[in-house]
Amino acid sequence: MDLVIGRVVKTHGVRGELVVDVRTDSPEERFAVGTRLRGRAPRGAGETDYQVTAARPHAGRLLLSLKGVGDRSAADALRGTLFVIDADDVDSGDDPDEFYDHELIGMTVTTVDGDEVGTLADVLHLPGGEVLSVATPAGAEVLVPFVREIVPTVSADGIVIDPPEGLIEPAE
Image (cartoon, rainbow, N blue to C red):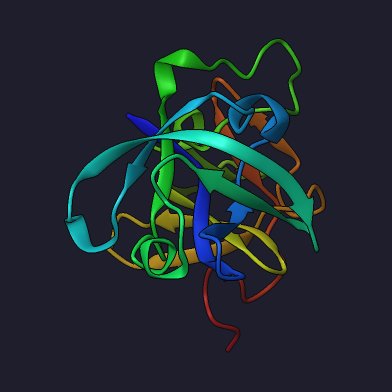
């Protein structure tokens, strides 16, 4: 399984710099000069390896230069590219409040009362924060804000939520 560590949002300037939305807690390590990146092109167009030649923070994102991408046209062709790493190369460690998405997907989600809600299908990283996408046994999707007030427990045994009224089933 691959983990996304960044996504090319757009180009910057005329020298082939890329604006990257960073999705890793270690951008200085993952995007260090000389690092090789696997880039997955949008719409299933395949993977390409790249080498980082420069990286610097800019307006909450990362400006990235890659070997062989020297002008705006070459950079524009990479728009939407995802930079990925192998999930086996990372571990969330011993901190009980830190985990990777792939460690959570497939876990059973129950309420604090013990009622099964479903199975975690995805963790959505939205501008307003993370949201859990839970697939119910009936095939519906329940979106749960991933905040401590609503998701008090995440453990190897599963995810426990304390949903406000109407989150799981519409209020009558």
